[in-house]
Amino acid sequence: MKKRVFPFINPALMGKKIKFSHNKKPYVKKIGKISSFTIWLVDDKYIREKICEDFVNLGQHRIFKFIPKNEFWINREADSEEDHFYADHLLMENRLMKKGFSYDMAYMIAAAAEKRERMKSKLAKRLVKIKSKKTLVDKIHKKILKKIGNLKIWLISGESVRDEFLIGFGGGGHDKVYHFIPKNEIWIDDDIPPSERKFIIIHELKERKLMSRGRKYHDAHFVATELEDIARKNPRKVKEIMSMLSR
Image 1 (cartoon, rainbow, N blue to C red):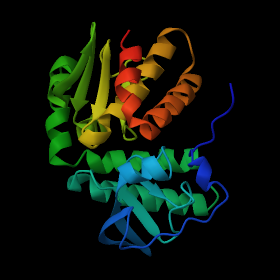
Image 2 (tube, rainbow, N blue to C red):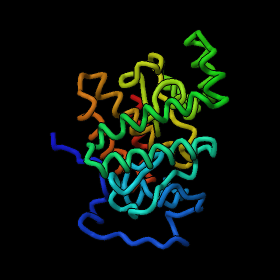
Image 3 (spheres, rainbow, N blue to C red):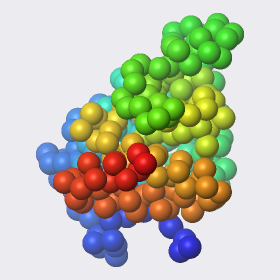
Image 4 (cartoon, one colour):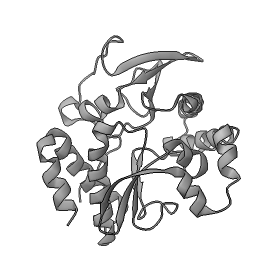
């Protein structure tokens, strides 16, 4: 199995300097500044399709080299209540990496600080009062997008998952990776635009199927990402791919 480098950049752009104009995609809206950084809402769907499949909720130059050094990017679908959490996280992460911390260590420290801030929000305060996991999951569930046998694919409140379970949750996930997702469930973040959810579902279905057969997460994720890429480039094949994964 070949190793997949993170973040995965569109092969057509490898080795090239990507130039952006603030009045064109992926830029959507400038929402503020923090320290010396300008914070932009960006078209995350466009970025995943054209530049980098690994961009989900947020990003900065020290991880995603295509992002200008003086900018922080946040996906346009993010709830505005989360914007300041993301901005503070990116600032701390960037400063720690500038001091020589590895990304993993910088992320862990920034995530811990973000978690403390999230626990002050009204949503987090409501969720923390729920003692029953079933009741909590019921609050996180929004609607069933698809059923395949006994497998249910749910649209969920991504913000609630990030507040209660995992800061880094984004895009989607399933029970073979995340302990907090009930058995036989796939979760799709409600930050993902409706037009893009089918691609995330394909990824999660393929990854889950491979892991159910004994494949390790990283190998399964690599294969699932390649299939997702095929689906994105060939939208007419989505129905066929979905049918194959539903067997």
